[in-house]
Amino acid sequence: MLILDNVLLYLLIFLAIAAGWWLGRRDRRKVSPTVSANYFTGLNYLLNEEPDRAVSTFVEELEVNGDTLETHLALGNLLRRRGEIDKAIVVHKNILKNNIITPDDSRLVQLELARDYLLAGLLDRSEELLMDMIAKSGPLKNESRKLLLEIFEQGKEWRKAIEIAEMLASGTETEHFEEAISQYHCELAEEYLGSNRFDDARSALSDAMGHDARNARVSLLVGNLEFKQGNYQEAIRSLVRIKDQRAIYVPESLELLARSYEASGADPQALHDYLKACLEIIPSISIVLFLAERIREEFGDEAVAKFIADHLKRNPTIRGLSQLIDLHIDNTQGVAKENLAILRSFTEALVAGKPAYQCKSCGFEGKVLRWSCPSCKSWGKTEPIFGLEGE
Image (cartoon, rainbow, N blue to C red; front, side, top):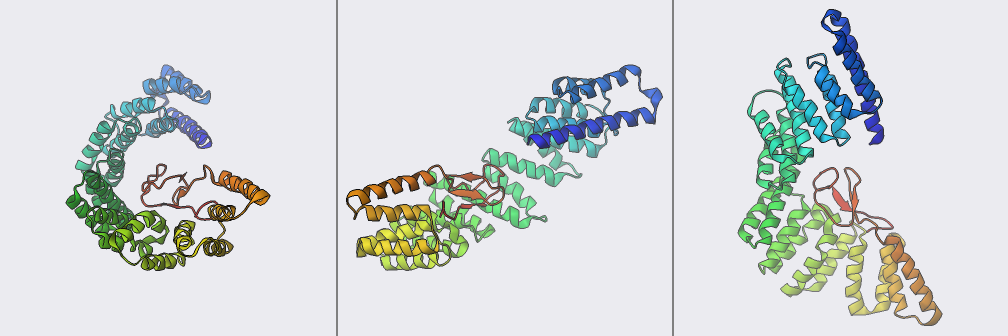
């Protein structure tokens, strides 16, 4: 980020120099000695990384017109990237005060000002600007809608987000926005489930599935809804669909799936068969450990130790090794038991604090599953981490 900011600073300096040279070359008689001196004073402040004084000088002395617009915009955007949002707002507002710029340039500056307001947390002001731009004819409508979508996501205004995203879905990024709309309906469904508005939740989940049939989150929420209403067989039917949608999310369903089988009185062997089929698709240690508990209850420690060891030979994980150590500790005495306990503490230390999920769009990692990435804001791109320290 620091390197990028420095590149932007040098670009801004170049633009400022170019603007000054062009203004002087175009008509030397129109540039007074005072303005010229103040202009280069502002440039000097930029070179010395004194943005406060540079902003003041450029705003007061560098005329806004078609030739200097890029310099003003570059200054405002640089300030925003450096976190100096209040100064960026001053720069962009100053541009809009001038009637010399074209309507298209004015809309461009309005969009940048809306970004300033969004980052400053002034959501109402940003929304007002963007709604005004969308209502008028002209370019940047889609860019305005995308920024407005960020505002509605940040404010958790899911119905408004759905309305805007449906407009955007008719463009070239249909699949991307269809996936987002499905997630917005899921967000509504979770709110309804939290207040026991089951009919509303069911309707929202039906809409979510209609926009993205591969959204495993829908099946998880439908399973939760059916379980809450005592429809245990329906809960099972919904949860087992995850294997064919996105099998990597099967571990998220294990607890609810087990409770649904138990409550329904269904044959537990069907659950075992389903999870074994899942293991052929994804080598998840969570599924292995879930099955291990059932094998231990039925066949004992020796059988479960063999089951886990066979899996670890093909797909070694620290979590699996820890479980295997636990099984042997229970059946070992003396020095061997003490050594296994030391080894167990090492395996715990290796995975302690390690992230369990990663966004496939930006690489953000976390301990809990977030359907919207906190970093890049992508929906449905966060997945369990597989490998030695993960699944």
